Length: 360
Image (cartoon, rainbow, N blue to C red; front, top):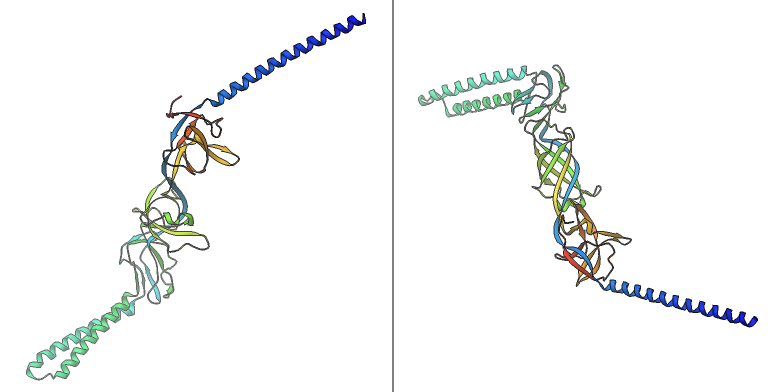
């Protein structure tokens, strides 16, 4: 009985060993086949869509704040001290060059002009008399010279009196718009008294600064777009007219002046403006945005070289309507993977086809 039991146990163990051995062989055969298939798949090239690299200029749009001033501006002062007799304008009035704005009391100056005119007339009469007497010998050469000198002095005195009378009035030195004045008839003024301002608002000068990094890109003659804060919907074309000769060492910026037209004088000097500058920067490779991937080391692209995938790290410069300007070791005509980038590995074989925008 014991012998039969031992034989039975031996047979059971032998059968189990055979089953386990067969299972292990089957597992090895299945696993080995899968690994072989995997290796086969690795050797098969991956299908990707590609596009050639092209170059483009980086177009920079810079927005800064500027301040406007009149193309010509003056703070008018009286030439002499005196008492205000008349204010001949209203604030915001458009005046012409040479128009009288403020008159001081000028009674004495008018009297001096009148006396000078009388003295000049008398000197002329005396000289005429001497000329008539000269042929008869009744007028000596010395008397003729004295009379001629008296005439010249009378002319000078009259000119001086007229200049003093002129100085009693403040005239507009150019055509423009006058501001407000604090003066009233009867006020005493001196040469230090600021009587009124005058602005030529037919054009405005807009002053602003640009960062040092863009200083070399700004040039006289460049076009700009200006939007007044008082009317942001208005876009006014302008042109840069002057640049500072040096970078400001405190703000690290370059002072710039531009000119804009203001024919109706609607925009007042002193206002703030948004100034937009558009200029061409460096030339960069440009690729489709979908071609750019990210890793812990930064942005990168897949480039195809001799039928294999190569990883190229780049720096993103600027996005532009579904494309990206990048900075990196790329050349015109390099083949960049656009679709099929996911799952690519370094050195992997790829089969390329040209990318067609809009294709499914």
